[in-house]
Length: 102
Image: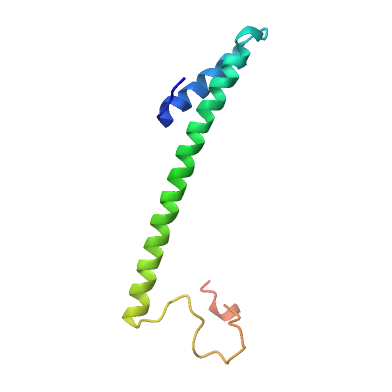
């Protein structure tokens, strides 16, 4: 079996899973073929998923790097930073009861 696309490999996995679920009696004669093809199809799917995850991580990392460069180069304060009016070493306590709008 030479499966190159994710869709083809995933279809093989679905078909073999369905075949195994619907068997009333185990088909020992075809079990080795089913397992071998399923393992190969799983490897193809895993490689494709890993490649997509890696590409997404690189793209998101690049987007984060670009946006952080723009923020630091613009001289604007980051809204996530701790307020400047807090004393050094003092953590921002957050909201108190008077801050609740209802």
